[in-house]
Length: 336
Image 1 (tube, one colour):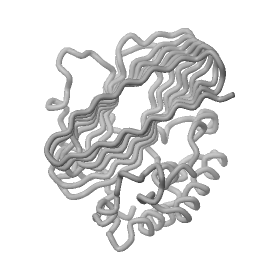
Image 2: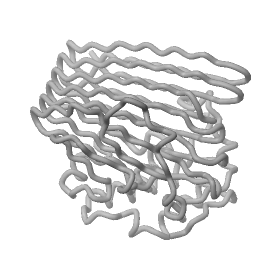
Image 3: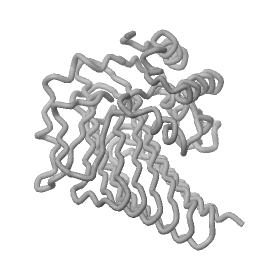
Image 4: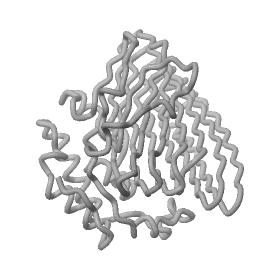
């Protein structure tokens, strides 16, 4: 596979990366997935990356990011990774590890019953057709289209009907930048069937001092009377660029809570979108960001009350030090 995306034109080089390695990215026999990915790269080619002229990106300028060189090779630097510096002491959990966007089986450990976890490339076609890009529109912005086209790894988690997973699922994303700037596009799919329960923690870290560009989408489907507690912890180096979108669909009587904690990173953009599509669904959104130096943190949230008799609560707090900056944009839609 082509290894380097140079800064002549980052958009054009991502497009070339897809077209030169199309079979690798169209990893499924599912015609539905193939069509979605080809449409996504067409949209990215048409629209490119968002700029400050886009209302949703008005206060987050990524122009300097687009000038960087990025290495897309994700194999060479994964053999000597250790989790010891990143482990949360005293927390017993199912551990899933991605290094530079690639699933690392040797570092991962699944100990709970009632839990199905596979890499995106190993998900069966029926589930891919049902859930991949089912909650998110690649026309939203260039990052969404790019992830839809280039994603081939990610954690796909399913909890069956009436099952409770007692231990949390802790997903580590480690950016190993010791050999240069890297970029990756994971796609996670989380499905909690009727009356099931799950806790998920996404934890982001860096090894090395050079730049990373991670563009991550997590789609969460919370079925009737299911309960999902979701945590996102960001503590990467000062040159890390993180664009993350969490898209949640809730059915009747379901509960979803999100806690987003941003401690480290260079430019952080968190999109959290929740659609309450079943009556008596409930969602809680919490956020804390502690920014230093020139760090920029942008939290965008959207809660769509698509049906009556639903409840949502939201609380975000931030502390900005030095020359750091922060953006918060929260929208709530209550449909007629």
